Length: 415
Image (cartoon, rainbow, N blue to C red; front, side):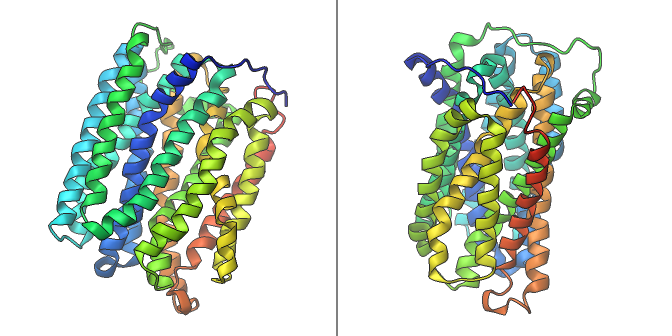
C-alpha cells in the first residue's frame, strides 16, 4: 500500500477547505442535538424501542434520499453552479424544520407522535443535502489533497458534534426548546459560509455520467468494485454503532446511572470533546502519509475495545478511556469518504456519494432499533442500569465487524 506524495497547502487553500467543511459543523450539530437530547424528552412516555424508531428514522431517509438526489444531481449538473440550488434548498428545509422542533419542544410535547412529522423534514432534508455536498469534494479537490480536505471537514463535523453534546445539555437546562433553535441558527450561518466559499468556483465543470443509464442502477453498479463494496459495508457498520450510541448514551447516564443531564454535559462530553479535538485535525495528515486504511484499522480496533468496557463495569476508571475512544470515533467519522474518493470513477461522483449515503443510512436506521430492542430484552439481566449497558455491547460488536473488511483492502495501491 503506497503512501501518496503530498505538497504543503497554501493558506488560501487551507481557508477554502475550512469554509468548504463549514456545513459539516452545522449539520452535525443538528443531527446530534436531535439524536442525543430528543430521546431525553420522550423516553418516559415512549420507551427505548420507540426511541430507537424515532432516531432510526434518520437513517431511513439516508437509505434512499442520497441515491435519488445524487444521481439526479449528476444528470443535471455540468458545473458547480448547478449543484448549488440543491445545496441551498435542502439546507433551508433543515433549518426551518429544526426550528419547528424547538418550538414543539418548548410547547411541552413529550410524545414521539408530536415530533414525527417535522422530523421527516429534518432527516429528509439532511440526507438530501449530503449527496450534492459530498459531490463537491471530488469535483473540486484532487486526490493528493483529499485526506487533508476531509480532515478539515471532519474537524468541523466533530466541532459540531462537540458543541451539540456539551452545549445541548446546558441549553436544555435553560429551556427545552433552546438546543434545537440554536442548532437551526448555526446550520443557517454555515450554509452562507459554503455559498461564499463556492462563488469563485461556480464555473468549474463537473464530470457527467454519459453512459446513458438514468437510474439508481448507476450507483449500485459501482458495488462491482471490491474496494467500494468494502467501504460501503464498513461505513454502514460504523454508522450503526454511532447512531445507537447517540440515541442512548445520555439515557445510559441519566436513566441507567441516575446522573443528571448537566453531569453528562459538563463531565462526560468534555472528555469526548478532548478526544475528537485531538484526533480530527491530525488524522487526515496522517492518512496522506501512511495510508487511510492503516489509520482506520488502528482507530477502529481501539474504538471497538474501548466501547465494550462500560458494558461490563460502571467503575469510575472507565472515564479515563473516554478521550481515547472518542479519538477513534473521530477517525472513523473523518476518513472513510476520503478512501471512497480515491476509488470512484470521476463521472459518478454524485452516484457514489449517494451510495455511500445509502450505506450510512442503512446503518443509522438499524443501530438505534437493534440497540433499543436489546436494551428492552436485557433489562431484567442488567437491572442495575435498567438494560442500558447493553448499548455498549451492540456498538462494539458492529465496530469489530469492520476490522476484517478493512483488512481485505489494506494492500490496494490506490489507498
